Amino acid sequence: MNWVESVGGTKELVKISNENLKIVEDWVSKSDWIKFMCEDKNIRSSTSITLLIKDEWFTKFNEDEQRGVLKKIIFNSR
Image (cartoon, rainbow, N blue to C red; front, top):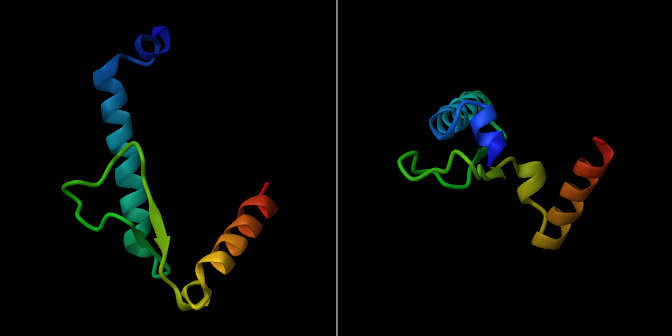
C-alpha cells in the first residue's frame, strides 16, 4: 500500500474520490440523457459510480440491444 501513502494517505484518497463524485454529479445535473443508478445521494458511492442512459433513443431497445449499443459506444471510442 505504498501507493496510498504516495498520494497522501487514506484521507486524501477519500477526498479525491468525493471530489471526483462531485464532478460527475455536476455533469449529470447538466445532462438530460443520463442519470445516476442510485438516485439517493446519501447512499451513492464515490468509488463505484453507476449511471443509466435515460434518453428514449436508448431506452426503446430491449436489454440485449442496449448491451450491443453500449459495446459499440465503448469499442468505437478507443
